[in-house]
Length: 369
Image (cartoon, rainbow, N blue to C red):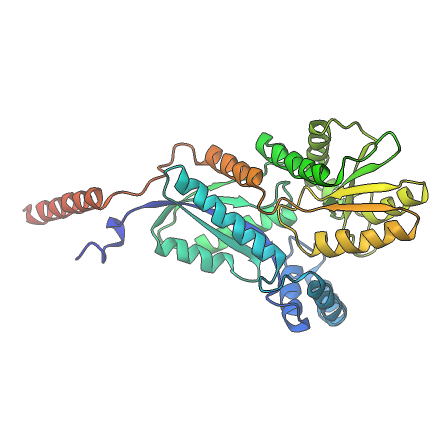
């Protein structure tokens, strides 16, 4: 048996897998329907009895929302680049890999989506083929929720459960209060203010931090997401030198009739405009990469509402995307959880020596009476 034929005698590698939620492959009703069906069929996302939800999903939601959502996706699709979420997430994985390389480490870095492509399974199989023996799962969800983080972990566990030879595994549960993450958020906001001027908080300008919403029942059942969003908001506000009242934490993307986490973003923006707020700066700290929820819902729809109800100056601050401080933060988070693992690959000489020793051991055992 040659070195390449023996899977136990190849260089073992450490890998970091970035996980994001997912995106349709194209801004078309067919592609959006396939994506929404996979996403909304996850019991972690929608906690309604399966039979009842199947009828609602397939009989009402998918036929109605697929076309409407496709139009929204088309409005934010990047020319030549496609989905903003996919583009920026891939860029983050690429730049994190380059950071490891520049630091002198040989760490595999890849990106997978919980729903859609590239699937968690195909990416894990690819890392396995490259010699992955140690795996750090780093979700691109700074605040933990069962609907996002746990669901992504579930899929990793499902895939690994089918493997005979599993890698060592570590998970990053959350980093909502990580110092480097907060510093990256602060840098992103300050960069925007350096270009457009700082809001006049004495005059009554407001800084809104909008996080993705969840049904309130998730909080009541023990999901820590709400608390972690509030902590991120507080830490970012403090790092910017703001006090409560100058900044407001809200929750967007409400769906259905059930009560969700409050205050809701859209009504808050409407209220501020009606009360005479002239300038509103809005940022989405829970989204490391711009996507439909930030570019269409917040940068477009919310802007229209603010101006409609009397506001004058609405400024959307882009997500972290490829901000160098964010790549540094990703590296900081990864290094914390990679502690103790080898971050370099065995040289060809070391591998050949290990192979030689293994062959000698095998031969000596075979020759014993």
